[in-house]
Length: 84
Image (tube, rainbow, N blue to C red; front, top):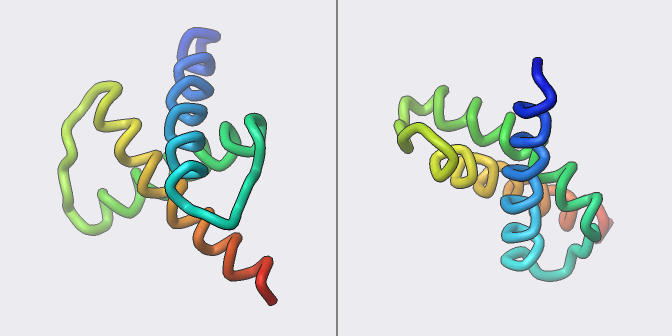
């Protein structure tokens, strides 16, 4: 894995995590937390779209969309867990 691909993961994760943090109210994770949630959301979103057979396209936009959906799911789960 090259340094360039790691930087791309961080960039995509950051964008998706910040967007998800903005959309899901009641959970504030900060910048580093948003990047981590976005990266984990990318794995979750990629797996979810693949398992459902949904193609969202390739490239940066498709990656951001998949990571955003996964990050929103993770933040919603985190909000449910924090309320208990």
